Length: 117
Length: 113
Image (cartoon, rainbow over all chains, first blue to last red; front, side, top):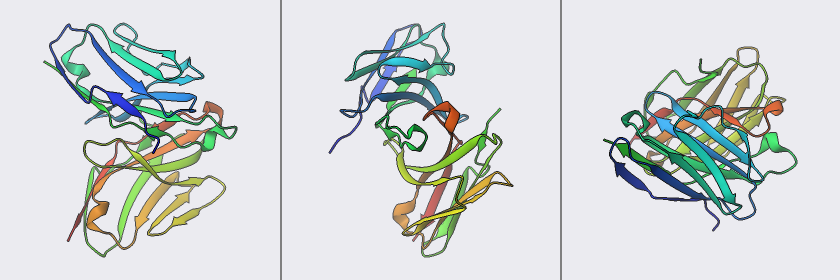
């Protein structure tokens, strides 16, 4: 049963601390997405990778957020320094990257619930 | 400016009746639309989709209708079941944007037994 996994599932930290969230996409998927869910904005796209290369990170605050894919089995989203307004649920999703990309379904992980005090 | 909007944050329906969830979009380049379902403490899961060349797609109890001229789509669940209680997200894709999805804010559906 292939699934996207995310760690940690929950994170409580203090303002100013660094937060690193990890995602393992489904084996064989070559597109990876990071989303943030807030009460006000619903699901916002933060970053998008294809074949480990960042294609779009326009939704991400560049001064404090960074997203990387060190290898095909790991995607990371880092916040440094964290702020209370970063409190949200962060989802990773992956997709198979087939030829008909625009028809692709994304498969979501369970999310990391972040609380910055 | 939100390109995909779900104007009803919540909806309550009696078991056995029809649930209708609505979604509006502004980007005329969107040509593929999806509905995702999300239970608490889980990630969204794909439910049903529709291409802009169609106006209806049905899968069991779930039917999605697309009105391109009105830039409106809706998800019908008939009959509604308590297990359908979840948050439903509408999403849209633009062929020129690869497989990036733009999501609406979600509608929380509560189906009462």
